[in-house]
Image (cartoon, rainbow, N blue to C red; front, side, top):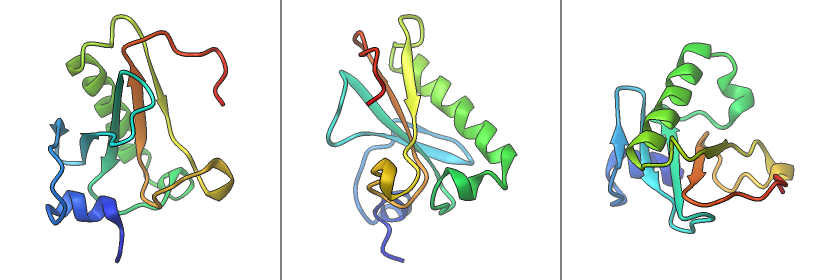
Length: 112
């Protein structure tokens, strides 16, 4: 499999993990869209949210990890956004489920 996130998870591509538990890891986005921009991804390869819907327990763990990352990064109190892109029309650039945790500044009202 030629998945960049699987390679990061496996340690084949160096990327400091800012959070890790049994289900997922979090890293900083290399092209940040906010002052704080982290990615939370499952260790298990899952293409997108549609595929992940078959595993609600994992999705709960991923959402909890997003909240932990926000707290760790100091943005939980001021507010943060969690987003995922699902499929080509949503501009999912890596076909491995991941959640963007964004904050550290006032976000725009529009989601696009």
